Length: 142
Image (cartoon, helix red, strand yellow):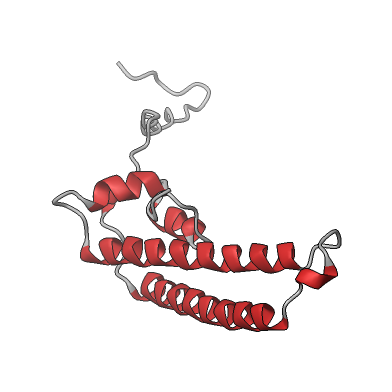
């Protein structure tokens, strides 16, 4: 799975900001009308997705090593120390990308109106002015 298709913890803020799915944003990023801020945000999002995948791999490796059904003779303090260091590095990297992407999303200019989804429902006609009130016995207009 490529980094552009991996989910990340910052997908929802991107979708909320642009009103499009990450896949749609990835498609727009390659086009001539893509804003530099959106391209940078998607690049950071891809880096974040890779970092989160690394965190998950280390977490799963530690869980497997500590599984109750594992042979106690297989436990290695050295391996667990190495995994702890690897996890610390992966978490720091993930946090750095999350913070950078969060900062970018907070400070970037709002998306251009053309990047917002168009409504698929027809616009309602403007309300018609109410007919003037007539008093009883008043002459009728001709």
